[in-house]
Length: 201
Image 1 (cartoon, one colour):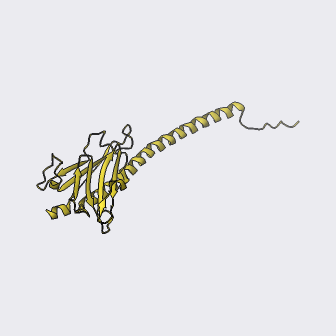
Image 2: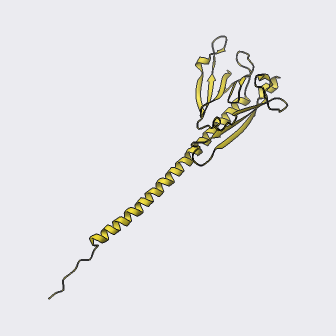
Image 3: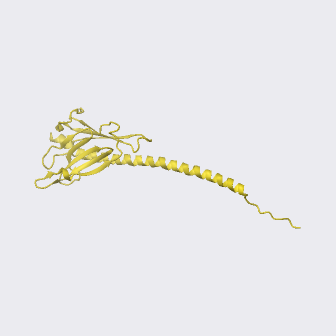
């Protein structure tokens, strides 16, 4: 009589136990990946926002340095405020001087540009082209002044009505994609001397 061959394999209970362990491990792995992805996504968004703000503030400083008399002959600086700055500058490096305005609108830092047109040349504010410089700007919620102005002696200007006194401008932009999550606010600071205004006085 020959011995009976028994096939070796997993029983139903062993299969269920292995399957349950596999599901638990897989669930933990997926949760870890999702947490890692969400954390890194926020960090990447913050990094992109900071880089965007850095590029924007560099352009703003460049435009401010080149402030000059308008095509109408108006003084280079138009108006000053803690959250906006208007002036004339050749921002596109052509033969004309543009009317430029940097201003906060909620959490957006914007740049408005008006070209001079007609004969004689004039500026029509209705043709202003507004573009986004940086979003996720938290200056208003953090009560941080965007623009600070200084006169020829280096003294901070308290009254911002006399535009002919300003010689130096500093800007601080506070960026945060989501204030409720880390990383915290990131501040970018830069400054510009109004070269052509200094020379003209």
